[in-house]
Amino acid sequence: SNFLQTRGKPLYRKIVNHSNALSAGNNAIAHKISNIDVVTKVDGYTILGTNNYRTGAFESSTKFINIKTVDSTYINVHVGSDWGSSFKNGFVTILEYTKTTD
Image 1 (cartoon, rainbow, N blue to C red):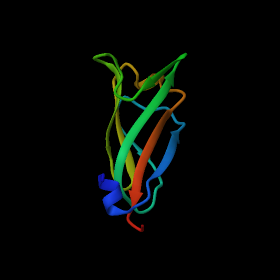
Image 2 (cartoon, helix red, strand yellow; image 1 turned 45 degrees about the horizontal axis):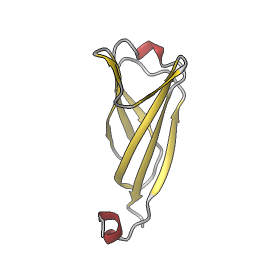
Image 3 (cartoon, rainbow, N blue to C red; image 1 turned 90 degrees about the horizontal axis):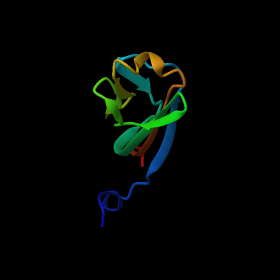
């Protein structure tokens, strides 16, 4: 059996839309999940112009976005300098997690 089955906890999924522009460098996006326990999966994307870019996508050494960590309050992302001012459509993160209350 896998880790989640042995703990007997349900798995939750939340899509976090961050509609404000992201700046170059580190950004903390509030996920507003109470009692988050273990984050089992993190994915995300942004729309830049007419293209969708998945997190971890590198167009060049200065055009990228990465999710660094997810903690009890924030999704912490880092945006490359050339994309920082271009994230006009925001950023979407998909989290799968368990809760401490289950």
